[in-house]
Amino acid sequence: MSLKSNLHNLKEKYKGTKMAPAFNALHTFLYLPNETTHGGTHIKAADDLKRTMNTVIMALVPCLIFGMFNAGYQHFAAVGTPVEFLSWDAFYIGLIKVLPLVIVSYGVGLAIEFLFAVIKGHEVEEGYLVTGMLVPLIVPVDLPLWMLAVAVAFGVVIGKEVFGGTGMNILNPALTIRAFLFFAYPTWMSGDKVWVHGAVERAQEVANGANVDVISGETILGSLAQSNGAGYSVADMFFGFIPGSVGETSTLLILLGGLFLIFTKIGSWRIMLSSVVGALVMGLIFNGVVSSGWITESSKFYGLMSETFWHHLLIGGFAFGTVFMATDPVTASQTNKGKWIYGFLVGFISILIRVFNPAYPEGVMLAILLMNVFAPTIDHYVVQGNVKKRMKRLKVKTA
Image (tube, rainbow, N blue to C red; front, side, top):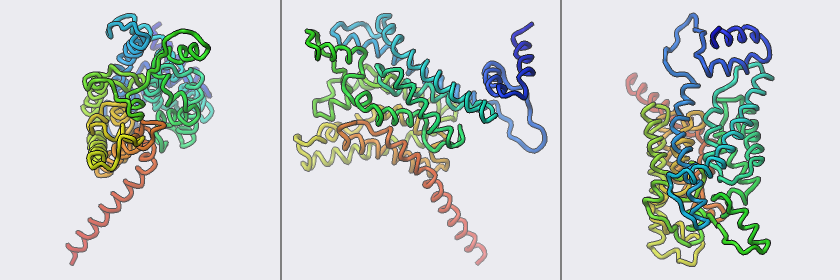
């Protein structure tokens, strides 16, 4: 008997029971649902929510694999024994550090999704398929797994399920999880010893009197915020050979992923482009302030404020957040004009927060979450503006 026949028999067995949603989720992951709509007009399309989520995951996989190589590469570079980037030694270190993050993210998140589906008696929603991949890519490589598990549980329950599940949440779930980590465990998200594997252990050994070299593993943003200089070339920043969160370092792969999402009509090019414009405008304003002499080198804001305006697109999590999280169709603006406004403000506020928050020199997370809250308001005024224009045209025609 074939696997499909066995699954069909099991489907009939669980039909009408509390475990039906959990089984159906596994069944439809392997096979297309055999149900068809009846009566009424409906749209025929080849895609569904699960295919959409899988398409986004496909765009994220290159960032994940690159992040594994980079995690090992940065580790060996920091301990003073550099290796080739595309080497087994680098990949092995990255694999044993990043893969557990992926497993915990999916394990905890999907377990909660299945639990809510069984309790509420509805089908398991596919929204966490992308969130589960995003989360390991936006956290430090050495983040303790128990912290990640607690944060994922918080993000899924408070950031998603309490609003009604996929399609109803007002905040991006992945960024909600990262925000929880930032506020609950700030030293693990903004400290300078968590971005390179082994840095924390070396620092503890030094504190205990051991004669070993210390690994700082500080990100570019941390160095610039302290006016220490980035120490990396533009090529390193563009290709991603720098310390940082697992999937956020390679601007090249993020750009290719963004083009793929635009080609498949899943990601909004309006939001991506307007976010870049907003960031460049804010960067130019800061460069102008520095050039005018209003800010001196003694200022704590000088480092990031004096950085060449377009460099902000290559460092930190700006590119990753713009492509994969600001474009979230649930939490972003829905109208075309609203997308331009929403995206511009995401980019503008990201650089603003990045410069004026030296304790945590990264602003894209907070900027996107802030604009998630205001997205419905932006769409409301865009729609009302269109209504008023139509009413004016109607009055002119009837006059």
